[in-house]
Image (tube, rainbow, N blue to C red; front, side, top):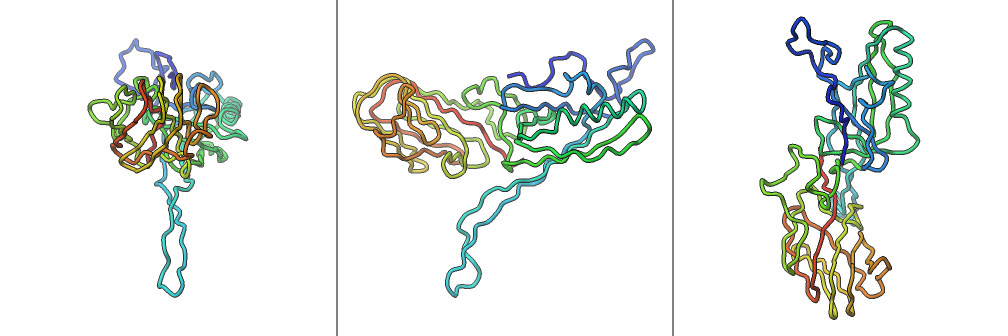
Length: 302
């Protein structure tokens, strides 16, 4: 998955230059490339937009996670009972710098920035200094502060709608996922495709993967056959999905929807779901022979 620009020469902080070196790509700070995407798959880097040639991000700062509590007052008891919590939206600030040829150039540059970032719809954004994470956002641009007749700075406030960052890619394309730091990955890459009936699925997210209550996608794909009744059990969480009757082909649990060879199959199941706890999850599958694939994005707090 190509997230950032493939250009060989990108804007950078001034290095030591010789008398015959080209100073054109260099600026007096270290810029941060960012890309946006409507679907999290096709990305558009700011460095690939000709009208934004000298529009550069020099800072972005995610806010801490914001938890919202669901409380209940019980009779005459002191205080309240905590029923549940969920992560709320938060704001990410990004600072943009521009310095061009003249005043008209400055006005056109800000107009181009608005065209790129202002949208009625939400989109994903990813920064090159934290490349494995993307955020689902809505953008609000402040009025530019002119530092000269041909230069300005602007603050962009991004509302992170999920309140968490998500991996660029999923465990299904784990080999192509962007490497990064702080993502809880062990030295040996975890396995998410299995051919045995007893295995461990490692959820390196900082939250539980719960497609029903928390809206965290999880697809489990079984390719093979079952001669009779089948069960999929996560021994760590106690979740178990069962299916009556034999089948062959591809059976999948897409979030909460069982599918068999592209058709809905809920009528043959116990209508349960599978979740993944943080860390290792011990699975046992009975009545099935074939390959099992776990496909889900990873989630982090920062």
